[in-house]
Image (cartoon, rainbow, N blue to C red; front, side):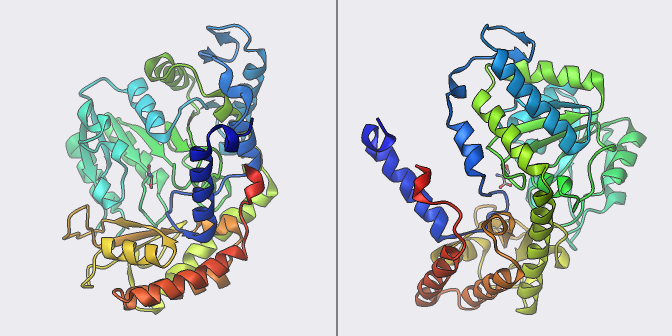
Length: 414
Ligand code: DSN
């Protein structure tokens, strides 16, 4: 029986979501469109198998084929990031990070990460996350120019003396200097942990420097710029660290690995290893730069005045309207983005003075600079006249037409 006949309610909602993804312009910087081949294996019988442990060392029988699958995923991941050890079992980026902390730290140890309100991530020590409850967390941020000041990071590190420095961000538009972070980590005897969830696809596409050989340990998600299935990975070049990571993920924090997702990660990595991938990664960055130029020409202020990667962070500190207002107005115009805090923030985190826009999903759809510039102009048109709901409705129709010229998925998928 098909899903349509077995569970019409979920079938219909899935199709509504498909329609939403096709009709709107997806500009949330952490979202993307994965391949149908990735979804095919993710929706396969591999979901039936329990495989606690690691290839060759499982707690259950019948693992001969899933062992091969996980080994392929590991080998592809190592090749992709040019490293010696990879764990492909984390169910998410957050669990990957939890695993890294559990492997290398004791409860109460000090970690130094990027402040959430400056572009960091919840799992980099935010007090509401277990990373800020189990460990004693301290933060560095960005300057008013929107950039990390590595001298300040150094000063904070020397005062705090953390056991681990966490680098990597969720809303930072500039290159992360991993070599500089390692220098600072070495000065204070800390591990350097790079969370490259946002930029992993750019790293493997050669358009952002790699965290290796600088970081002791690296984590990522597989679904953002990498365009694979939703999940996490951890990599290192250190055998002792690799052993500790494996024990921390299983049995430390997870049980049976999601073998259907691990297989889908392997399929995604195959795509990331192709020549085509380099073109995609370069186009993501070229598109973000084109978007930045267009918005700045229309007199919008960007944090750090531009971008080196896949996202731009608009600042409305000089405007009457907030990030939330912009988020809602653009949503009405068919553009999905998210409000974000900015350096020097004066509004609450629920309102904010910024908006984060990313190009990975539109680039996956086939958008090039020409289309991105047009989208940038439409964003500025909406924001220039933010209360004009008739204009938002008109732009929504225009952008739907544009979106439909770049077909990403069809109903035949279901
Ligand atoms: N939710 C992701 C993001 O939007 O950046 C981070 O986990």
